[in-house]
Length: 170
Image (cartoon, rainbow, N blue to C red; front, side):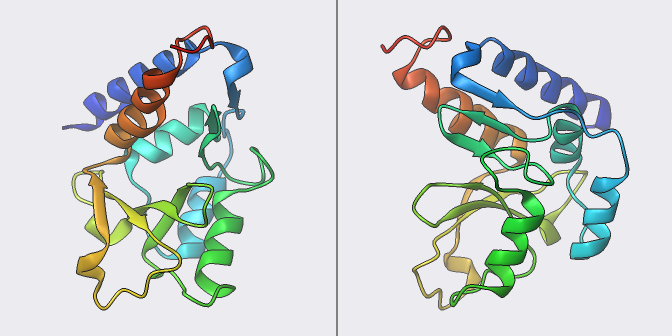
């Protein structure tokens, strides 16, 4: 998948997210400055193209409580930079530095990007359980091959299992 295809797919996902009733969503403002580059320098990893593009259009999204973290406290008082700091430096069972938590599950666990596996602008999404002692990182579940597929499955499709776009229950 080339850069143009990644951006087109992200635009399709953003368009689909906009179909949900405003009462179901919270969407952050576009990032129009250098914060993403500064964040990459801070953590020492390049971010995947799909996440970077998504955040430049919508800096964080919440759909029926499923969050995609943005930078600088845009949604629910949490941000990528704050959660990264907390999960890597302030908890007992620290997350590996190369995992970027992008979405909490509400139980202390996170969907994360496995940043060193970045290839052709994309990297897999893994599920980090905060209360599990992993003997090896091979035990960490890979959920989706990239951020876009994760947004489609976890954020959009799982919401549509229970709700219609207008917010009515199925």
